[in-house]
Amino acid sequence: MTQKLAGLNVLVAGDGKPEDNAALGSFLLSYDAGYITGQVIAADGGLTMRP
Image (cartoon, rainbow, N blue to C red; front, side):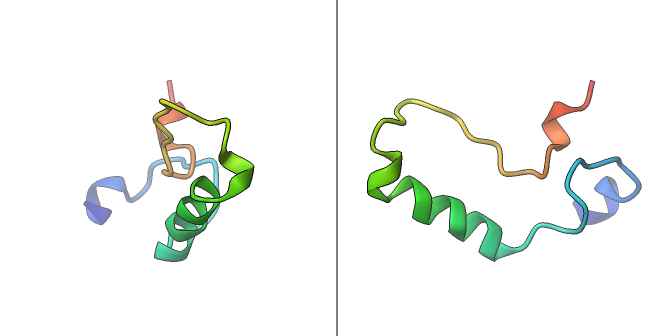
């Protein structure tokens, strides 16, 4: 999959790392995310925002 995505414009510079998704998971499991329900959150560096 990395080869297919090579050369595409992604809003966040650099490759995503497992730690990025772990940070999102930690937030979603925290008290601060208690009001977030029924959402799909794309952790893809902005790739899905492309027209």
